[in-house]
Image (tube, rainbow, N blue to C red):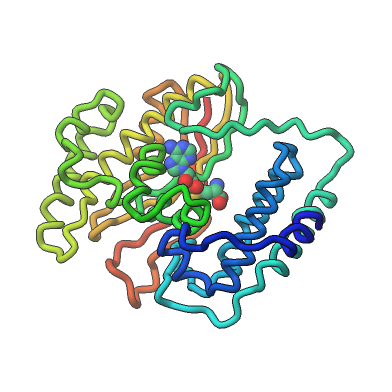
Length: 316
Ligand SMILES: C[S@@+](CC[C@H](N)C(=O)[O-])C[C@H]1O[C@@H](n2cnc3c(N)ncnc32)[C@H](O)[C@@H]1O
């Protein structure tokens, strides 16, 4: 509440320093309030856990207070508007209270022993060898969802990027390649990727699918580079398995929440290939537990390949 009181007394700075996207997403009054909240936070930041949580609250209200709409999941659509965005001061108070209430609810009396490592799953840098007995993971699917673009509003508000192009430099290189925007044609040598030793256990089937996709795309308007996306995705995930083998004890269990995919209608057997890549680095067995079907209602679908989603269990 100290932050709110301080924000209410502050003058907003020159709003021109915010990128264009931010001006499309907020009216002047809302942006002034967000700006003073941010200034209050900067002036009171002391690296304490409470200060970090206040930053989380500010980031957490950016979508609720924007007059722009969000698409399925978290893309931002500045041209579509929503009717009643929340007032930033009200939203900040509500979210801070909710976070505090959730923390109070989940206190068990034991001090929390969780450690957070922010890093790339392909290297698991910072995680010691033989550290884990159980890994629960929700990795990207090779389904063209753009996780870099999903951060655009927040990164723009924090002035860490000016526009879409900056995402490439700041975010994409840290991400598993699961969308076509991530793999422009000129940047990737398909044959080189397919010849890498990490994907050797699946290389025959992977090459066949990628070559089919390379042909199909020429018949489609968007000419999306799914052939490169699929090759790079499995190379990246092979590296994740390699790192997981290092950080997991023997025996251990890994659970991936994962789904298969069919870009341009070409089926990609994601669970089978991930299982085979895991065995190749030394895990002992894999099984798939389906939790739901996807793409089984034919209306408005881009293709008619039935898909599913569930838990891939790896043991060993
Ligand atoms: C399916 S989402 C799951 C997100 C989160 N676990 C949840 O349930 O909301 C996949 C996540 O993996 C992250 N990701 C992509 N590449 C990564 C990498 N190389 N290392 C670690 N995480 C990555 C994406 O940014 C995205 O947040």
